[in-house]
Length: 177
Image (cartoon, rainbow, N blue to C red):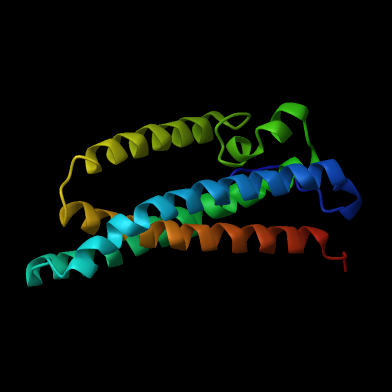
């Protein structure tokens, strides 16, 4: 998770900052939702057609469980979602024009981040793009098997990101005791 100076004062959250943070979280959520929308039909096609062999069906189930854990829980819930929420809170507290306009990219750590975050974020984007291009070459049912796991991981990630953002902002907006 990215480390930012804690600004616990509710007064440090401005309306422009909150709007930028909302744009950042909503923009990332829309990217994930768009990917889910496009992948869902491909992921369920082998299930609906009944063309899976027993071995393929077992592989489908195993792949879904693996990606739920690796992509959904470890990747999104433990790493990406808290980092995205922390960067959105930082944006709400200290908005800049560039970060506000490009809030989804800012929340994803694609700029104005520590070097390690920048390298990790950009390598992930490049790696995911490469994997997407390779998976598009697969025929059904193999593409559906891969996409089934990805749909589960992305769904988990979308839920984790939204709940993490809500928890982060609820905590930041709670009155001090």
